Length: 217
Image 1 (cartoon, rainbow, N blue to C red):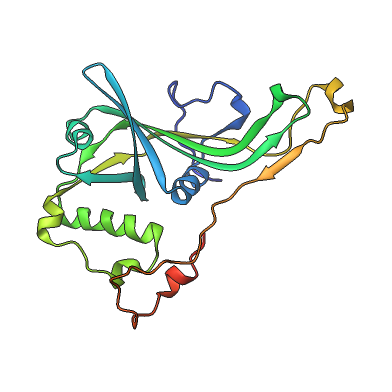
Image 2: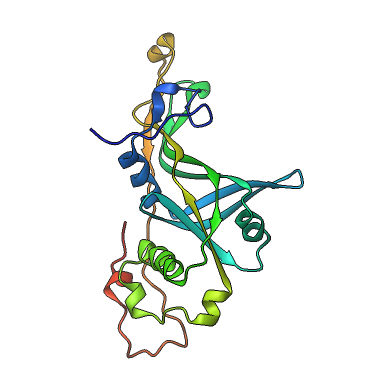
């Protein structure tokens, strides 16, 4: 049986509770597929929501940015955060506009992010960012030097208070509307990747890496 995350009053899905998902395997799969998370926090009463790349390593998510970033300076002090990701799987067209919907998978994680100072853990997080997006790229490109590591802040959020919400399947109409002569169904959505575009200053003799030429998810 998959390990479940403890459901709390803050992470329990209230609206459409049947869509709530609490097992770590499903939650981690969503996190690993998503490229961008949104980090919500408040400074002096002003809410901020910042999009950024992230990666999961074990039972924590890591995100990074410039050491001069206000967000990262504030978060490293232990400000409570809300991290969310959303994957769109399809547009759900019902017979009535009111019942139109979307198939999606989303995750919400709550807690306090802490700054990562250990150089080895910093490198591990940067490796996870790189390999999550382009497996094989870490060993191809130049890795961060000491100056770059110092200029980069990395924060870790343990996945202790986290839940997912998932909607899948066909439209759900009111019973009388099923008789309407209106097309209904789902338009699936997915991310598509085009042919890589070579940098003008890239030596033409260097072949395009396989992981870039045939990139897919």
